[in-house]
Amino acid sequence: MTAVTAPPTAVPSKDHLEPDEHQGWGRSRRDECPRTAHGTWELTDRRDPVAILQRQEEHRLQFLLPIRHARMLASPFAFYRGSAAVMSADLATTPTTGMPVQLCGDAHLSNFGLFGSPERALVFDCNDFDETHPGPWEWDVKRLAVSAVLMAGDRGWDEEVQRRMARNVAFAYRAAMSDFATKGRLAVWYSRLTDDQILAVAQDENRTAVERQFRKARLNDVTKAIAKYTEVVDGHRRFVHQPPLVMRLDDSMDADAAAAMHQTVIGLFAEYLDSIPAYLRVLLGGYELIDVALKVVGVGSVGTRCYIALVRGRDDADLMILQIKEAEHSVLEPFVDPVAYDNQGHRVVVGQQLMQAASDQFLGWANVGHHDFYIRQFRDMKGSINLEKIGSQMAENYLLLCAWTLARAHSRSGSRIAISSYLGKSDKFDRSISDFSMAYAGQVHQDHAAFAAAAADGRIEVATSGY
Image 1 (spheres, one colour):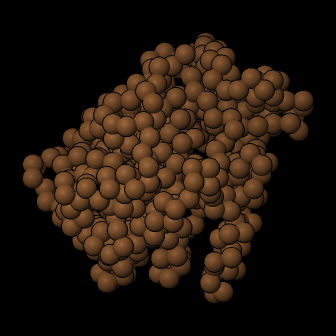
Image 2: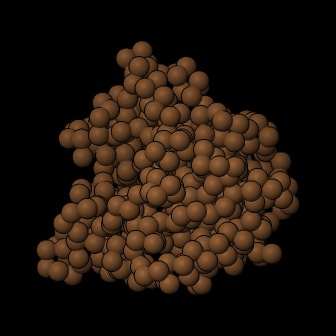
């Protein structure tokens, strides 16, 4: 059994505190870390962002890294998506409140979206937890707010809009945390954003677009994934070989190596089944593995060992795709108190279940060789907002949803009463986050330029097509 320390509770010394004690503790943290202290960003020690990213890539699949680099070069916002390791090192130099929660660790705008709950409802939540780890709650808020500034900059919106978006992230987080501070633990635990709730607050001019996104998400299920990623060859269903983004094992290596890898994946599934509840073992135990492919995903994850597995149940009409994704150590780990997991996939699963209101019921973990993995369903009613097509007003409304979701996620593990007390009723924190976000966005532009220079002088290799 994996050894795990207790999840973060953000409670000092005593086993249980009364609400007024939480409030007092939260207010007292202002003495150590004033709310205005969050407003500054200054690079005290010259760090090389390219070197940080190269260290992160040392144990990844080297032939895929040019794809990662090409995706990150696209814009400062794209670079930001792939450089959580750089920002984590930077955040570690800033003042912190000392009130831990379970962090997402990479809470940028593109890591929120829609997916199907086990009850088949469409819910909105954080959806990427590769970097999840206990740490200071404000780090997630800052990462979300900076992503809002960078997105607005990419869209050509002026500085006033950028500042307002960052400020609104902080305001919405503060307001949501204030509300959660009044609720009991179960009420917080069961809080969620469904499609009906989002539609209820959608403005009339946005309602049609929102409903369209919901329809797309509901249709983005296993049936669509099977149609998109598989084909029938000689009477057998298999993945479509589309290198370098989707590479069937049988088409990417010699027959003996492919057969050995298939056996490795089968062995991985045996360990995975031990990590999920017994009743799900009965369900998944009735599937057989029929094909495996390496699949490139995301921006920051490119180069990790990420597979998709096609499994067959009763017949060829009873198919499912599972994603097997490598779990590395969190980029936060060097800068926060340790949490003991003997499998990083287990860390990801526990963090996701702590933060999400409804998680994929098939989440589990396993290890093969020297690599940890977590396993989940692939493309289960997954949907997201196209940030390149929405207007500034809809973007601001979307940010409010993300900030509310982040506050809810933090409230499940941390002291929501203490955090709300720290934040208070004034807009000091909001203005500080706006100031920090504008300053740090400038840092991201500098780092992106340094990354582009490294590409130009050959320090890093960049794909020219197929990414």
